[in-house]
Image (cartoon, rainbow, N blue to C red; front, side):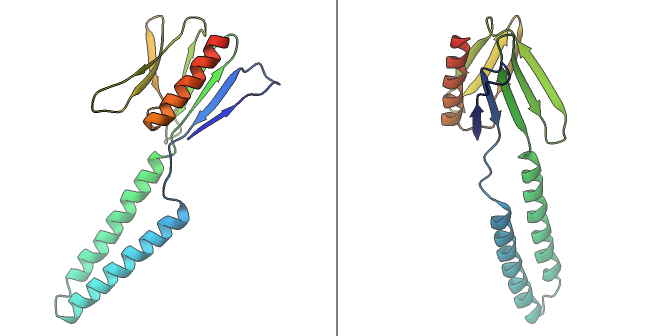
Amino acid sequence: MTELTSSPQDQSRFSALLTPHRSLGPRGFMVLMSAVCIVSFGTGLLFYMIGAWPVIGFMGLDVVLIYIAFKLNFRALRIYETVDLTPEALTVTRVQPSGQEQVWSFNPYWVRLKLEERVGRSTELSLASHGKSVVIASFLTDPERADFARALRAALSAA
């Protein structure tokens, strides 16, 4: 997801908050886990009734592993990036799911924006200037990345 804003109070000419798309919300997760639990319990009960009672433990283990996998995925979706363009600097801030923050700053006059098409893989959007570069918006889809690159390129050319 990309959220573009411009605010006249500060001298920001371009500001964007980039976040990954979350297709499964909290309610959908509860519905999915409920369905998995019901199917697992029903299957486990069936095996119990035919005398294969140890299978119940494995069915419960499946539910726990599915839950852990989803929770780890939800944690990874907490990453986000902010891109701020002012007359003095283009600043990219990436906040990892752990809360660790990385900041890159470029001179808007010298920065190069490159959207690289790669065969069989997703595109790569990068900023480079004076020997340093950073790949941004890696968690966006290709069309979202292209739209963001177009908007940032327009803001940089106007700067």
